[in-house]
Length: 112
Length: 113
Image 1 (cartoon, rainbow over the protein chains, first blue to last red):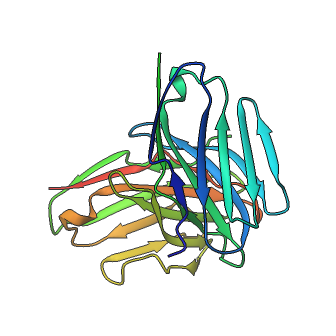
Image 2 (image 1 turned 90 degrees about the vertical axis):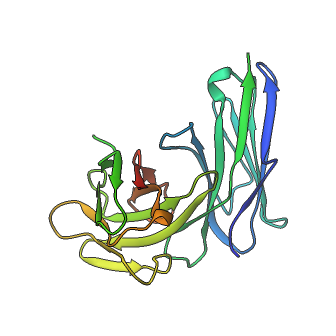
């Protein structure tokens, strides 16, 4: 299977703490993308990191990519209750007609 | 610039009926992707279309499912003779140039009763 795998499956933290989610994949990629999905809602694109990039920041988000280990991490700093959602990584595999292969997601609960 | 528009948001069909899901991509985007999400799972790729062409349908079930993206109008995902197992959220995404993010619609939640 080419599916990415996130861990942990579920994470519960207090407001103000940092949340780290990891994603592993299996073959070479063009880029890796992180998305957020609130319960029963659509997907919101968070950040895209290309295969030649190692780290990217966007506001309170920090994404790293280690192509040698075929893994990525998403760090949310100073979490807020509004960050409660499911977080998915999606990989754009090299030569794969641009379709995204998705992991099963990490369910994050930020408690006030 | 409106985002990706999907309709309907919710669709209820009886077993054996047909379901038609519509997706209008973002302005200027010529690539459309359909994904299916079962409860408590991630998204599964179904089909990738450009205007009037199916580029990759490797994720589409062999029977009952079809997709089109005509020259004019929205992309349509059609499911014939729906069964309970078709109940899921169906998401459409559109994209522009290669190696850029895909933008998703709010999804259509299909319930087969």
